[in-house]
Amino acid sequence: MGIPFETESQLREMGSARTPDVLLKTPVAFKMNSEEWKVVCWIDSKAMFGDVETHGRTVLPQCETYIHRFGPGMIIYWFGHAPIERLSSANGDISVVGWHLPEALMMPTGEKQHTTKRMMQWKPTY
Image: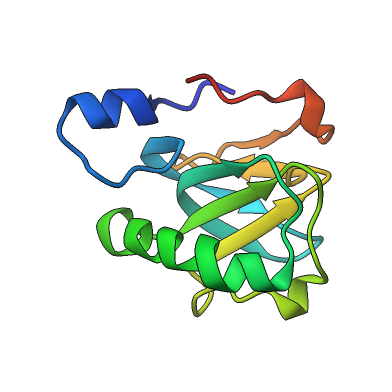
């Protein structure tokens, strides 16, 4: 996709204590459904099912620290998640996806690209 980013290990080398899996060097917008675009500055990947209790008790507080440092972001639950309306979005600053990646992204230039929707084709690099 050609999006410049820094990995968690690169951020740690620079002295960051709390880091998402990927920090985008420039924000991009992801098309979350047929009408809604969400700006994303970071992505955190979770190899788990996003249940309501774990999301609210563990994942959300962790991601709120990323919001304060880096802006809005996206959580990817690799094994799906509870109904989206039951998962907090931290006042709209967190986008939650599972099973499939968003259908498209928009670069800061306005250029739109279609993403590969199958999650197994996208692997974070650590």
